[in-house]
Amino acid sequence: MHGIVDSMWLTKPDATAADYEELCAVIKKDLDLPLSFEGLYKWIVFLNSKTGPQAPVLNRYYGIFQDRTLKVRGIDVRRHDTPKIVEKCQTQMLGILKEADNSREFQALIPQVLNTLREYASKLRSGTVPIEELIITKNLSKMPNEYTHRVPQAIAAQCLIDEGGTVHAGQQVSYVLTIDTSTIPENQALPPELADDSTVYDSERYVDLLVSSTANLLLPFGYDVKSLTASLR
Image (cartoon, rainbow, N blue to C red; front, side, top):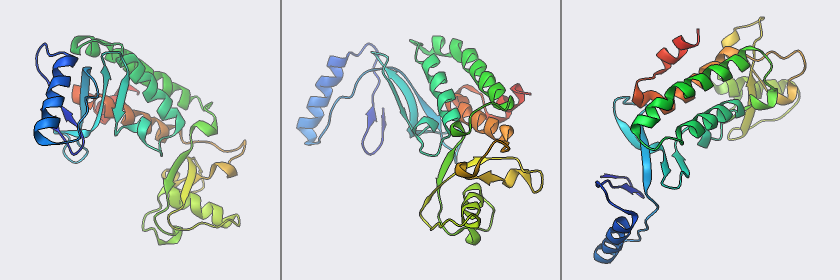
């Protein structure tokens, strides 16, 4: 049994949806708790904690119900700051994995997921991904000149200021990770509205985001960022 504030996962060999519905009714009656049965999973993957990689957490998971409806929580496709290229890649990966009926079939599909990673990495490295698929949006927690480190959202916000725009703490700032050979490449970001035909996006930093999103799905199966990165060389 796993439980968090508003959810509980139960497992019992050969239990049916009716069994869980009955248990739900008993708990509601005996404990006077508002409780509802959400559904019966074929499988569910609880993802590793970011602070303790060996321990799974209960607010980051993905799985499918018996009718193959997919449910995800706490991963890239649910985040507002995920660029579309990463969202598309992870969505395609989940579409592959949802065809599995059990653990054995799930693990047999992992090579297809890894092929998807390679395909998207190749697209990025070709330099042909449209700017609109690369936009990242993050909150500006303070004014650009107040950041100790030159994080991308601060760099992009400063670009807007330099062009006569106004920004304020708490504002959402969108940017594209770019390469500018005149300064430090890893510190470059450009608001999409300032991008033009000469803008070159930093393909390797976007590949890193793809790798991270893939590791978010597959780390419980032994695929970490280091091994996935090595597989793309």
